[in-house]
Length: 238
Image (cartoon, rainbow, N blue to C red):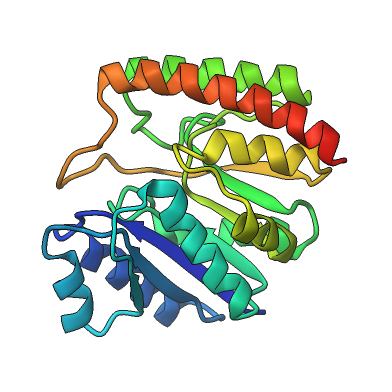
């Protein structure tokens, strides 16, 4: 079974080597190999030079496409190279890659087509994000429940694994801005099973998140609207 880790990165010069080294160490410890690729989203810091100097498998995007275009590039790569499972791991080193096996096993066992690493279904993760973002995530969870009748707790988690069917969907159709909640609507509306598992996440040590408190409010409203529209479009798709 071919498994690919997709690592979107924008200005992650202080974090990206740690993420890749953690994956290298994981490969040394376990029974199957993980391939990984860094999608450098037009970084203006030293990310590109670090990737090239350390001979890390990567794609350099000429312009900054944003998280949607960046991640979709990874799914296009996964589709073209016939991977069975793709896993998203953020380039900021907040995701603990030791949970990758827990993410992929439900897919391998046929329990689901997408598995999400969640901070909110147990007390395993001490890091939960800011109170404002937690409130926004709960609201988005409610919107998802209304539109799909499915409850997902960690709506914005970028730590997730998908099977071959979802790789094909995401390679051809992936939202541009803050795509995790909207893609959940697509996957669920098309009849695929989604599962959450508890994981630990770390607080960002270097750099800063692009999501400010004001952007959080804008994001919640914009994504809620996008989820409703996506739900209507997927109804027509079926």
